[in-house]
Image 1 (cartoon, rainbow, N blue to C red):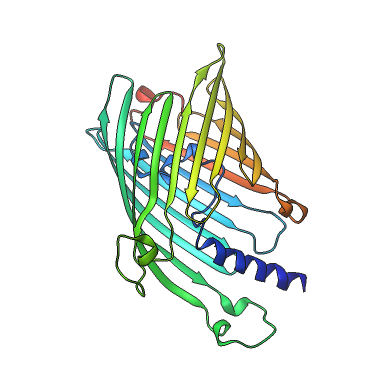
Image 2 (cartoon, rainbow, N blue to C red):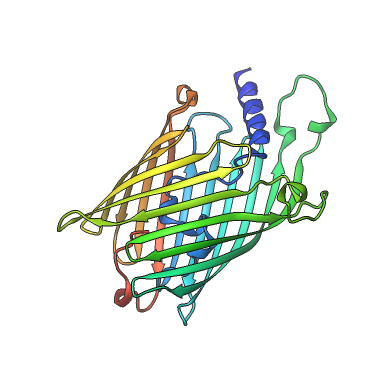
Length: 307
């Protein structure tokens, strides 16, 4: 009985979120800006790749699991950037696979800052293994799995940045089209997706010979969902070790560790403590991040990786 109720609860949760929060949730987004904003592509003068795996609400059957892979870099003229994001998101019996291509163009504002404008194009595939559900009464709805629902989508963003600061605004899904709905620039008429409006910002301060402090935030707004803010504070020691804490409104408190092993590799881990009633039924959320930076002249151009 407990297993059945958990599966049904997560299925209902997913249906509710299909009209509200639809993009996967990750804690270490501050080290993978491409996931949030297409204008982030090419913001470093080398190619950078990131792998992230998140296991949310450990111990709760049917809880979300997310895997993200991304790569981006600047083209030879350094004004244009390209990026690719792939992610798989699973919750209960539902699955989402997404591929997004990103393009950005940067304009130098002054010696320390650039403004990048970006667009993206891609698609998401949704499926649900309804036959895995246990039901009391027979219903034709649950006799067949749902698969192959593909939605093309497009997004845009802006990113103002320098070596120690950044401000970004993006709408990762600005337009989308569902084949059984009307084609329209009004997203609510063309698909079941909803626009996510994201605002990010951060700054790095020197607080001593060996320490740097980086406060940052992410504000999120989705129609028919509560306004959310992530507040983050990270301490960097000797340009190698990150120690961070993050508060997500209405949801969780997270602790973050990152180690920059050398010029090429970095690895991060975060643990979320759930602040909702789900904490009585789960053991928090775990997230692992691996980053690899590539480029033959990497040693000549690279500064400490702040974001």
